[in-house]
Amino acid sequence: DAKTTQPPSMDCAEGRAANLPCNHSTISGNEYVYWYRQIHSQGPQYIIHGLKNNETNEMASLIITEDRKSSTLILPHATLRDTAVYYCIVRPIRGSNYKLTFGKGTLLTVNP
Amino acid sequence: DGGITQSPKYLFRKEGQNVTLSCEQNLNHDAMYWYRQDPGQGLRLIYYSQIVNDFQKGDIAEGYSVSREKKESFPLTVTSAQKNPTAFYLCASSILQGLHEQFFGPGTRLTVL
Image (cartoon, rainbow over all chains, first blue to last red; front, top):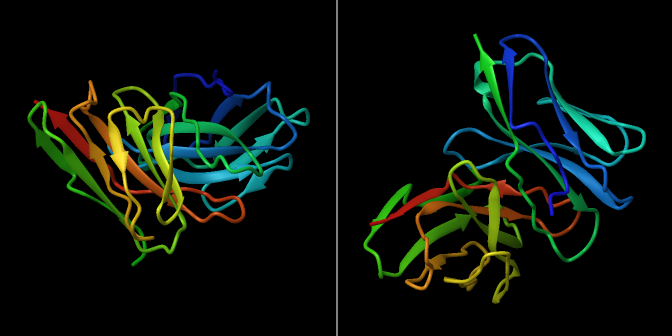
């Protein structure tokens, strides 16, 4: 039972902003939105997470809609090294189950 | 230099043999995890451990076994009972308090011939 829906692939020109969408229409009030990415043949890397407010760090920005049913990960100036599979994950704030449920994600290809 | 190490990077085994994958972390994390990834797919949880000498089955534990004798180490054994063992195996760790972001190792690619 997929909790998130992402497009399978996207392209972006180098230097431009990459906007990766995620639908999580069944998200509950005690669940966070997490983003990870996985460069080919490497382990996933944490990017950012949020509950309801927009968040920004040195890697990316996360915009969550007011109804929390969707979000967008923004890479402001994409580089070739940002080519990776990006995973949007919903998980509870508290609880003994700490697992991350990874779907197939979005393959972002940054083109020169 | 803190992090998670997995060894080896590539591993080849004959069908019917058990094989143990290593995972070590020096991040002082309480929780550790094993995931499996098949080509073009997301990660699936095999086992996880929140504390030494304790571990729980994930979504696809059949054919696998783990141990957690030390906080730093969480080895995974792929047994001959695992029907399709060829895959990319990823180990991760996290703290238990707070939002417990998971840190991943570089992975081990296991090929069973």
